[in-house]
Length: 113
Image 1: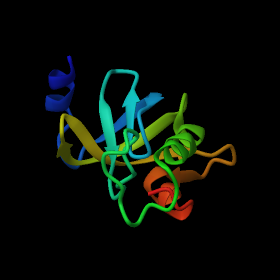
Image 2: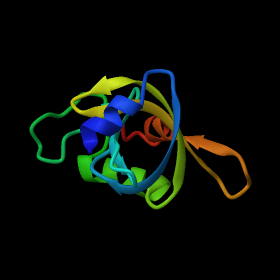
Image 3: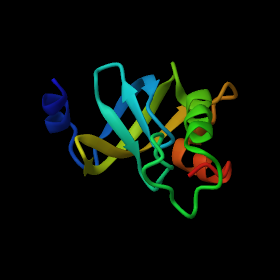
Image 4: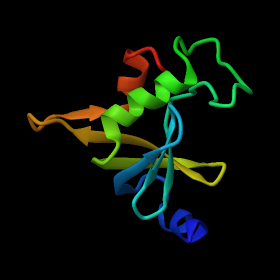
């Protein structure tokens, strides 16, 4: 099913994603099975195999922050391509006041890239 979903999302296309899980600070899964890697984010790996010099906090802190922002919420995403069987995208979730928060920008602003 994942390959079928990847084939349906083309670069430049917007798509809806109900976030059902967050793998780490830059990857989440949608209810339809699509795995999304946030554009512009390179979070530390949970297994400790790779640490970026830019991410200030741990991999688990980055994951927890992204979970707090997106888990269980609908996101509107714009596909930018594909990476390791994931759709890369800019994604935003709505705030209670009706404005939107860009998840990539929020991760960077929080120092959890």
